Each structure stands twice: as C-alpha cells, then as structure tokens.
Length: 213
Image (cartoon, rainbow, N blue to C red; front, top):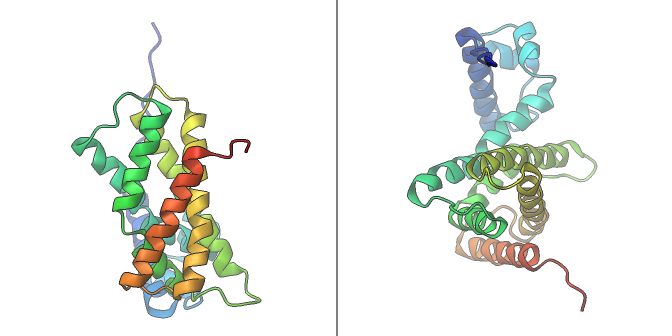
C-alpha cells in the first residue's frame, strides 16, 4: 500500500509577512502609483525587513504584479463562487467555455482594468514597465483561472483548460488596450457599453475560431 505524504502546511508567520507586504504594496500603489515607493518604503509600511521582502518576492515589479493580479483575481473568485450557484456539469469543452463566458460577462472587468491603469500610472511612451506589468498580470491571472477551471472540470485535460483560458484572457488583454485608448480608463455608461461590445467580439472569435472561408 502506498502512503501519501501530506503537503507541508504554510508557516503562519510567513503567511502574515507575505500578506503584509502585499497589503502595503496595494496601499502605496493607490497613494502614489507604481513608481511611488521603494523597497525601503515598502518594508517600513509592511513592518518587515528588506531581506524579508526579497525572501517573498524577486523584485519590486514582482510585488506590483502580484498586487495587480489580486485585483484581477476577481475572475478566479467568480469562477469559484459560481460553482455553488450553477455547477459547470458535464465537464465538456463547450460547457467549460460557456461557464467562463458567463463569468466574464457578469464580472466588473472594466472597473478593475481602470484601477490597474491608474495604479500603473498609464502607459506613457518610452516607458515599457507599466505595460509589461499589465501583461504579466493577465498572464498570472490566466494561469490561476486555468488551474481553478481544471480542478472543477476534472474530466477535461489540463491543457484544454489552459488553451481555453489563455485564448480568452489574451483576447481580453488585447481589447483592454483598445478600450483604454478609446476611453482613457473612464467607467461611465458609454465606456462600459464599449467594453461589453469588445468583450462579445472576443467571445465570438474564440467560440467560432477561424474556419476556412
């Protein structure tokens, strides 16, 4: 008989430090934008040492990306919450796709994208860093979303979940840039109407693919 070894439990102190760093980063980003703090400022706000900061994160950009990913992580939370209300069922590719589409339509993505854009200080010409962090945020969220989707649809191969989610999330990233250019991150009715129009184009493109004409 094979006896499985339980996974090690996270250390409470390490969890608290990790959470404190992310909370401090969120507050500093909200106050001053992505360029508004140094490692020293962040460590002081979080009540930890510089060494502790780098024990948890590789760089300031890694911290900012992680903080931004938490904001966009509402998609992952929505996927989790929707299971209790409407289980995916079937485990087919089509049911999995429709499940994600429903979440995308019902989640306030334009509000989050507007927050990210303001937190990163916009995408000024000549400074690739905010755009890189924005892209990394979508990539990390896509990975988390794919993992959650695969866990809920165990009959579907992990690769299928990753391909589905990456197609939709990359499409969202592309239309987000168009939306930001057109609206300057406004969240009024006209801006939101434009977002949902662009979202439907992404959904349609991914659903039908590119069959030969």
